[in-house]
Length: 460
Picture 1: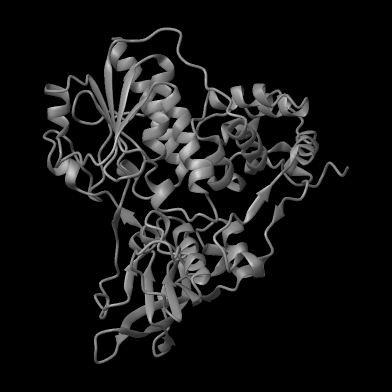
Picture 2: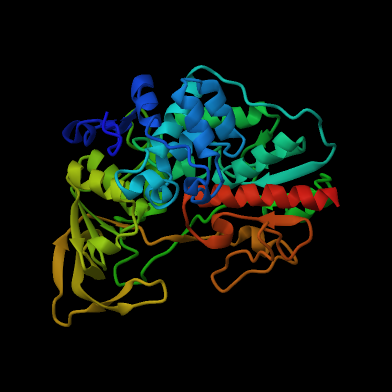
């Protein structure tokens, strides 16, 4: 065993997986997981924990895994995380826990995410039961949204003994986990639904098809339903566009719509009648994880796919693993390019996209080098579908129907402390509704902080 190198993780063959929606990464088996766990030094001052937004006790869970004690490893993880099988798949470990792993200084970091996934999958397959609270607290808390922030907040509050109800606007629970992330990265029935069932087993109640701000307001929940605290984890589902000519043409999607039709409404499955335009040539505009998800989905539907991004490869905000997988599968990258207009035919359908070449100038406020147009370098890319993956912002429905809830200039909910307290007493918020579109694990961290804040608020 070479302790400087990770135990390799098995993947589907790129040529095979590009034609199906089965999970790409096959994960570790027991022997591989225990062998990889042996590489962990169980540091006395674990930097990996500091890199985890939900502060999982990584050395102790891996220590239990070394002894093949999966039940104890799962117990350690679930003291901090309500969604370990999700996190093990979609967290950017390379910039968080693994990015701070001491083993990574002189070799490759421990595969913390893959080990977490193995433990969580084993627990789901063998129906490990979560620990329930010793005592119940007779206080009702409402959680708006069943995405990663809401599920985490609900799970932590239920663990403390509160009477928690989650309200979901859609017909399925999971938020972005079910509508935004493709099946080949995050299986819905095998992982997401089973993790939600574990949250329910802790005593959390769920109600779907409830649009807070329309079906019921926050004030009505407090006054009529007697909820003493509320957490808003409604995410950011309002797509952004470039406002360029042709953007309203038939064949232009937001990535949010495109992925929702495929992931939640199963347009990729011929047994469902969800309408979707499957283009011969698809252009995805953007360079984040959502852009990779949209591109790889289009590829699996049979399209030739190009990603257009205005910066270079080093500046791509998507995870390195996702970019690598997209390239392996056949997605083409047109980097340092920016759309100028979408070209349409006489029927108003997309038939191409005009882009302009870019150079990188000085760094902008985010620290990334600002893209600058190369005058006169415009050219056309053939396309019959264009997918805009430019980020999202919060839906204004909740804020517009809730008096006393302040917003910032981006229309995100303002919080006044690290626990997510908003400007309305008793109402907390976290995740994309506060930060704008971000990662699953950051939303979970916000949900965890809010649960702590709500507990303090209700204990005063």
